[in-house]
Image (cartoon, rainbow, N blue to C red; front, side):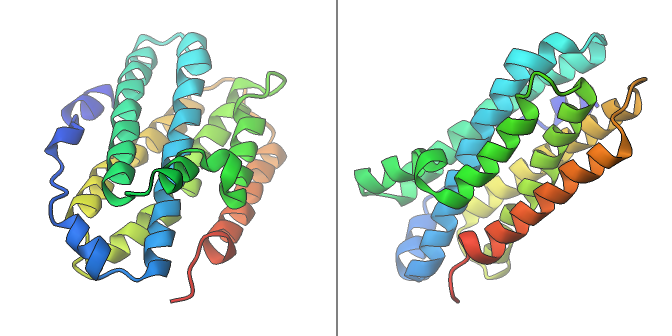
Length: 221
């Protein structure tokens, strides 16, 4: 999977956001702009959590050379994701105060704070086993991201925001690969969490994500 990740490398400079501003200003209504802004804010916040975990813990805990190589590459790709989300927010949001509000989403947007708190509780818990944290990590990338990816694909279906939707294709592909790798690594663990713990992790995440998408940031279209 490391070679597969290596072959999918890309950079933020490949994105053309020239047409996006026209759609942003002229074709999206205020609710839609708010919705997409909050989606980008969540992505920007969550990538920081993911990378911190990779750098501080997982990269040091795994022993297999292939896994260490994959995580090293994932850190680089997550940095590109973070750069991309910053670029998108800077491009679409011209008000400095609103920009700061979005970049501080973990503190300023309650539904994003709830997701971040959950992720930190499971991923950063020193009492949790590696297997438990691996499941939580896969859940963040596999469940917490999916609804947001789908919302941006909805814009593509409408023929809007080509730069944003192209970045979404690249990033969703990357995150799918990261989730698959976490699942692959889990299957190689000799000591796995009890099924009840796995069920708790996933069930909690699904409930938080349902709340996030149906009430937390969803505009009234």
